[in-house]
Picture 1 (spheres, one colour):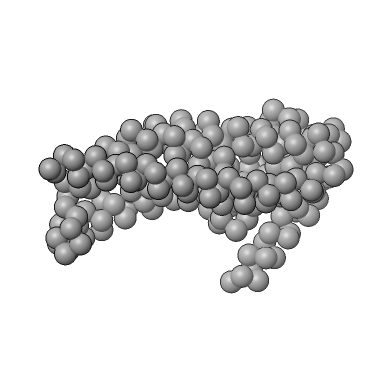
Picture 2: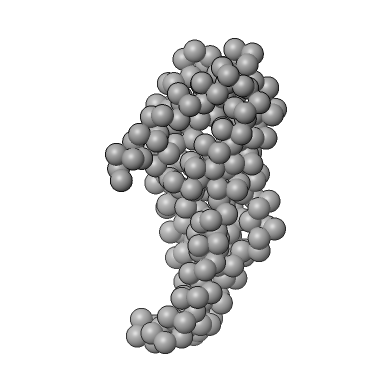
Length: 218
């Protein structure tokens, strides 16, 4: 399975390049589908897709705005399966599990309702900023589904965060030109610094939520 992922990742740039050379209009669909896969399969990094597209904008083969729209569509559509997976887990399993087994771990359906209220309050920030952090941006859709974040709100904030990310990568590919491949190195360094900070923020919000819950119980 890991070999399959590796072959898929390494073949994407060649596939995009060949499509741009043969038919630029089809290339937009290929890039959109590649971004869909990037969101569906987390090991595929977006930093090997959109910067390459930006490079072809630099060469004059692709249009910047059409490329952004294509990448954005693929990104947002790719977030849906994870969102609905979270929603399925919530509706079909999580509530039933808490109802039957929650008393053994000290969790009730009332606690679940409180967590949904917490996500309604802070979930927008998590979904928006999560879409800008490599390694988190894909899976952030799962808690949004679990906590039943309204679909229209999820689409809006996912699209906004994804739009910034897609523009950033595409513009970077355009500015770096033939050196677009080094963008991945910068993104990896950024990931090492920002990912722990984001996790700390999430933990802080969780601790704050549980403290409030305890006060309400007392």
